[in-house]
Every structure is written in C-alpha cells, then in structure tokens.
Length: 83
Image (cartoon, rainbow, N blue to C red; front, side):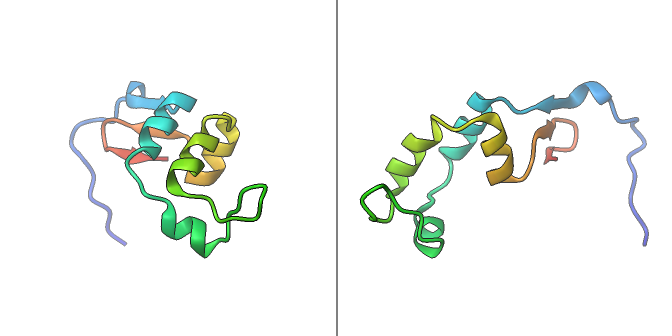
C-alpha cells in the first residue's frame, strides 16, 4: 500500500494530550440523543437520558472515562488527527 508522506518533518511538539476540559469542549459539538436511545443509557429512574443530562453527567467523568468514550487521548495539531 502506498502512503503519501509530507516533505516537512513531523514535529513531535505538535502532539497534545487532551485534558478533561478539552473533552468537555469537544463534547458540546455533538448531540448524543441517538447514541443514548440506541444504547439505552438511562438515569437512576430508568428513563433514557436526554442529551443535556448526559452532558451534565460528563462533568463528573474522569479523564480515563473520556478517553474510553471517545477512543483517543491526543490531538496532533500538525495533521489534525486525534490519536
């Protein structure tokens, strides 16, 4: 398989580890209603959570929980990829 490469060397200083605040900011750009309904994510009363309630719950998540949910830990600002 051919993989295109940049003539510019990759700067390792461009990789940033996401913080909890970064993940919270990232999460605001999404509506989780479909995911919540599909996965039957419920509150303590057995009701499927709303998007707003889910985002409120996220504020109490650990960094590890964000990494597990989103599936990445770092942002490469050179390529724009999350890793």
